[in-house]
Length: 338
Ligand code: COA
Image (cartoon, rainbow, N blue to C red):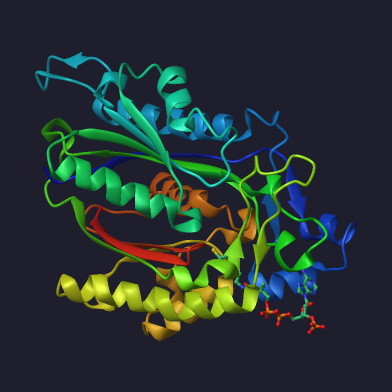
């Protein structure tokens, strides 16, 4: 079975925190943040601690399910002689996150119940900003081997819960958000020429110190705080992201110019510019929303994908390149025909 993304969804908190808002509490400025990162504002969750990640994930997933039902119908269709998309079609839920509300149960299990998915399998995985691409890889592998036909994947993070607000180096970079995609190999939802092509993932664990956060339950008296060596992470990203993109392209005998759009993790606008330059590709092929949401970690790629999908920027036959990178240090790139 060839998996394809049949629907997307996303959700961000209502509360907007602008650069000027931050500059009232720390030694920074709108000008510094905009010119160094491209970020203008971010969203911050105000939900109760045990609901933050869950409610964003649920909203994003509900939107993806609604999109699938709009596209394929929710009932049996006499015209096609087929059942439309039902919640029962989802056989597995994977949530990629590094900021869960609870150590356990997995957020995916809470979603399985809240979304009324029947006895679907469910688990979380953790790979920081590369998490969504890792979930995509896992879901695609399950579908390709015939184990499951339809998988709901969610990339979501609430980085505001682990930001060190006294560290201007990284506090200005992050925001909260969630994105979801439904991946299916079911022939009922197939479309000629559309589907997952390939994916390459790597990790360089020697870089763990550059981007890290202790487990949240480690010591309640001293909350877990994210630490980042920004310069090192920047250098890693601008070198490894073009490399892994070239690797997945070469494996499939493609060139950068064959790609219609590069849907990259939104960490810093200057990283996008540098990757575009190294691939000799125009910035028009690198859509971005970092200005509105900052870095939403595992949420960034699926939120952007959903925005592109809903605004009609994705056309049948487009070859998309998705690339994630971050804590690990991990990096991955995927190719898919839209
Ligand atoms: N406001 C004002 N000044 C700030 C600041 C802020 N929010 N953050 C840092 N500075 C200061 C630094 O203290 C430094 O001052 P100094 O020269 O007096 O020591 C100066 O700005 C320059 O810092 P530098 O680290 O050289 O800036 P930079 O151009 O490398 O940009 C980052 C910093 C963090 C924006 C950049 O390194 C980056 O984006 N890194 C990757 C981060 C990332 O993507 N992380 C997630 C990966 S998934």
